[in-house]
Structure formats: structure tokens, C-alpha cells
Image (cartoon, rainbow, N blue to C red):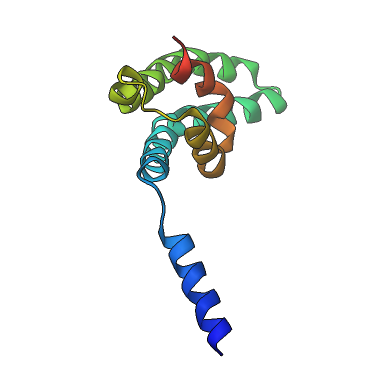
Length: 116
């Protein structure tokens, strides 16, 4: 019984003690996922149109996609502006958080967020 209590206490402390950087990375990742959600939706529509052979309609989404991509980039840069300025943005923690929350966007934001 004592061992169970000790084990339970340890696990409770271990899982409840998330560092400030982990929380910050999680919050930023959630925001970045939100920034890129409209772009991912357009991308999904585009893929469906191309697979169905509807090239004309797909072409009409290209300009919308370009505009939405610019907005998503600006949104993501704004979310990370202060952390990038003082180098407090932990790239590994943010990468893990983004890959957990919305893995499809990581290739799109990796270079953008950590460029010098």
C-alpha cells in the first residue's frame, strides 16, 4: 500500500510539473496551428479537385492559397516575435508541440520560424 502511494505521488508530481518553456511552446504551437488551419483546408480542397480532374476550379484556388499562406506566415511570425528576438524560443520543444498538435504544417513553418 505504501509503495502504491509513493508511486502515485511521484507520477502525479511528474506529470503535473510541466516547465514554463513546455507550456509556452504548447501555447505557441496551438496558435500556429490556428494560423495555418485555413491554408490546410485550401490545400485539402486543392488536392481533391486535382484528383477529380477539375483543374479549372483548382486554378482558382491558387491565388487564394498564396494570399492565405502569406497571412498564415505573418500570424506565425507575430506569435513568435518576442521569443525569437531574445532567443528564448526552444526549437525542439516547439517542434514537438507542433508535431503533436498539427503535424501536417511542420514542414511549412520550420524554415520560417527558425531562420536567422
